[in-house]
Amino acid sequence: MASNFGTLFRISTWGESHGPGVGVVVDGCPPKIPLNVEDIQHELNRRRPGQSKIVTPRKEDDAAEILSGVLHGQTLGTPIGIFVRNTDQRPSAYTEMQQAYRPSHADYTYDAKYGIRAVSGGGRSSARETIGRVAAGAIARKVLQHSLSGYEALVYVKTIQHIAAEVPTGAALTAELIESNIVRTCDPAAAEQMIALIEKVRSEGNSVGGVIECVVRGVPPGLGEPVFDKLEADLAKAMLSLPATKGFEIGSGFAGTTMTGLEHNDAFYMDGETVRTRTNRSGGIQGGISNGEEIVFRVAFKPTATVLREQKTVTNTGEDTTLAARGRHDACVLPRAVPMVEAMVHLVLADHVLRQRAMRG
Image 1 (cartoon, rainbow, N blue to C red):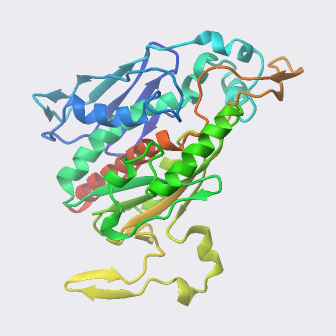
Image 2 (cartoon, rainbow, N blue to C red):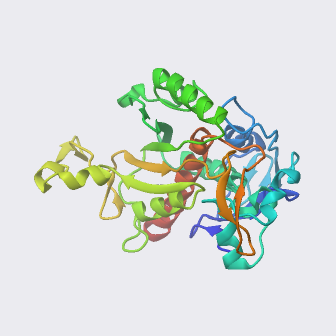
């Protein structure tokens, strides 16, 4: 199983949803980066279950344990091991899934690939796998803040089904605004509508999806490794590796296909001694390399596959049947996916900062 990510800043995640625990090993982190368990725990608290009325009620503290690589609040440059124990498991909720495949879940495909699967909790196909990513992302963020002045990744829910947030521009878009509501959107008025929609579909035993947008500030020009490790290519892979993702677009995205070249091109100008663009339809990346503007992209998340309504399916012996899932599941993954997207941004950019440094000093 390909559970490794990164070139110089590398992570390897491990563990199943209902096993003893999950974790990550981070290799390639530079030494003397300030780091303590609270830095990691803050991010894990943002993705943990049970944090609000609109997410899964599974009660997990998600308490991080640093096993190696850190001494007296500083990284050593050696592998950093992080472990989070699973404490609230209910395998009885998955009894029917021993035989019946959940529609649009990974049950059938894991059986087809491995011939065996961890039924309880979905094993590695569960979003609980992302704990390792988020913990590692917290470390990558510290590396970036140490290396890049003004670095900031702002990730927020832009749409849930048909409800769209009004995104403020410039300095009005802040992390504090995003964290001011349990949906993690940048529009408090839209947040109330989104909460009502999520509660409605949950009461119906259903689920709903949407779009998360990311704005990254403080990235210098020059990051990215053409031709196969272009910066947007690595970001796209990182985002589409997250559970429930179904689409990625950067800058103008698919809307750019309706424009002409003259309409779409970002004209350059000099701002003192800095090269800038008057528009940002490129999304901060040109030719696979950052140009110094804000990096802007969006990620589409499907409705949660596990719903509490009866659906037609088949068994692992090839018989038609029906299945109504039980257990504790998110009716909408987007509020908890925000820190997951953030983590993957940090991981990609930390890796590319180290790669650029290795090439040019």
